[in-house]
Length: 432
Image (tube, rainbow, N blue to C red; front, top):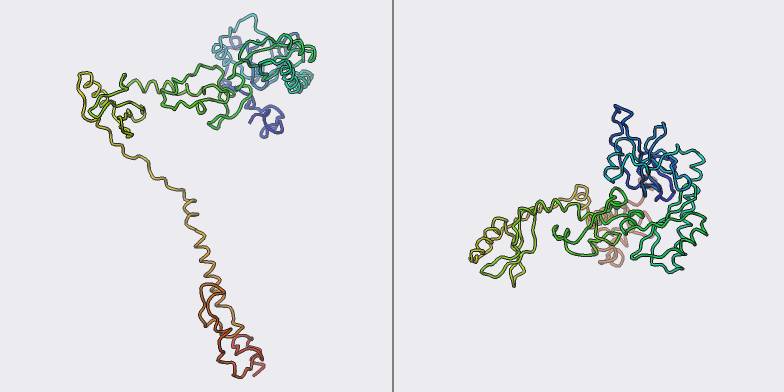
C-alpha cells in the first residue's frame, strides 16, 4: 500500500515516516536490477538520474554534475522555474540510459536540467509546506472553474517546492479559454501558473484505483505509454462486445485487451480464412466461434440451436468441396467428452459436513433420557409406566391411576409410597 493513500499517511512496515525504503510507495516504480553489478569504468558511468515527483506521478531526467553519489530513494534539490524543486531519485546507473532510450531523450542534451545538491533540512521543510497547500489550492481552483462555467475538470495540482510555480492538470473535450482563470489563480495563489491538459487515461493513472481484476491499475503501477485499443481486439479474443465489461475506470477500452492480442493472432494463423459459412445438405452453416485452445471451429445450422464443433482439417475439406460445387451431407462434428473433473471438497469441508444438527440433537436427546433413567425416583414407581415421545405426552399412571402400595404400611415417610432408594443407607441403619 502506498504511504500517501493509507489512513495514517505513514507506512506500517518500514516506519520511515513517508517513504518506504524499497520505493514501493511510488507509482510507476522501477526495480534497478543492475544496481549490484560492479562498475568497470567510473568515467563511462551514466551521469544522468531519473527523479520522480509527487510519488511517481511525474518523472524527469536530471544531469548530476556534482561529485556526490546518489542512491535510489534519496531526496535531491533540482533546478526549477525561477527557483528549485525537490524530488526523489528513482533510478541510477546504466538503467537510466535504457529509460532515456525508451522515451527518446538525448543523454547529452544541453537543455537537460541539473541537480543542484542533496536536499538539506531547509529544502525538505519548504517542500513539506508546499505539499500541504496543494489540497486547498485544488479545491479553491475547482470552485473558480465552476464559477466561470468552464467545461474542464481539474484533476491534480503540483506545487513547486519553493512555492513559486503551480502546475494544474486538467481534462477537457474541447479547447478551453482559461485566460481569465489564470489571472484569478495568479492573483489569489501568488504563483506562476501552468495549465497542462492530459487525457482521460493519464487522469486515471494519477488518481489510481483498483481494476476489475482486483489489482491496482496498470497505468498507476507500470504502464506509461498508452496504445490505441479498439473492439477488433475483443473480437479476435472471442469476447462479447459489452461496453460495460470492456471499459476501464477511465471510461475507455481496457488497455489489457492488447496484452494477449499477439498470442491470439499467432494462434489464428492456422485457422482457414473465408470459412464463415459452409454449404451443407441441411442448410448453410454459420461460424460462431473459434477455439484456439482446442483448435476447433463452432458452427450452427438454421432452425437449430445446437452447436457443432469441427476440426480445422474438416473445415478445410468442406470448404474445398464447396468450391468444387459439392454440398456435404453432414458436418461430422467432433464428440467432445466432458473434461471437467468432479470437484472434491477439501478435507476440512468434509469433516464439517459429516456432522449435522440432527445427529447432535439425537445425541443430546439420548443423553438426557439416560440421565433421567439414572436419576433416583422420588415420587414412587413412575418410571415403570409407559410414556410418549415428549415429556408431557402419554398417560401417567403414577399420578392419576391407583397406587397398589397406597394401603401398605409406610415406614419411610408419611406422605409417599415405599421409597427403597430415597434415603441413604445410614438412615436405614438408624431405623433398624
